[in-house]
Length: 306
Image (cartoon, rainbow, N blue to C red; front, side):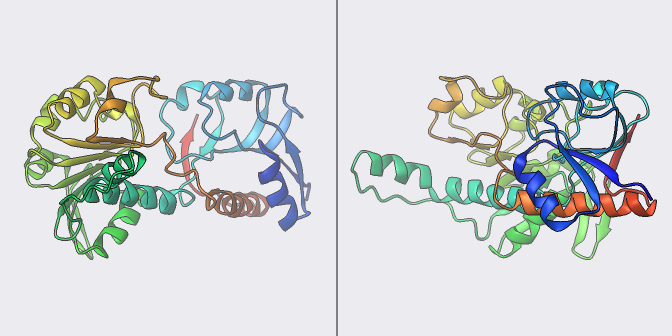
């Protein structure tokens, strides 16, 4: 059996794979220059650089493109015909759930206010909302949503799940999108974690935000384009809603943008999966894909076939 040729974009991922196996040929390719070979069995694109680099695949024959991202909005338009494309499901869920809880806890317990006071050299006590006993609505319930729910339950919250279609599991009802506005009106915290597609672009609009009660916290960990930035700014500027955003539109959010100035808005720069957990989990997934291709099995996490 011939050895697989695998391209990875970074020295760190190269070293992680090289340390665990010697039955594949590894090359570094960040997809900014010519391909190192006309045929590469597995191509791993660089992380968080946009979809434009995928145009390089027109010059390469490949069996699998293994993304380092969970989301794949806009990818199909950039891929040549005949490509099998897998996402990184299983890599980022834990870290994204950690960040989601960190944003919720920081917003609920007033951590940014305390930090600002400390920067002024001030001891400023204040009363803030708990996370305990709050009703949290998860809009979007895939792997990330499940990981967030697992952690929220430990904080003695009531978690309501909402996905594209209603279904039931061991924890009860997962509501369909037809129940969205009814559930928005009941929630204390709304976490949006839907994939970006035609049906979810602009989902968080003025109607969505107006359906939420005054003082509700909205957390967006999906994609920036899931939300209408002007609507977010209007509701936050009026002091009616609180926001915690790991994603924005545009992204990066320009220096000096009005959202940065609002004390009821907490922004992190799209870092849900950017932790020390990523590299070993990405290496584990890539090793599994290599094993599967070597055996002639179907790869995991295939989301597109062009």
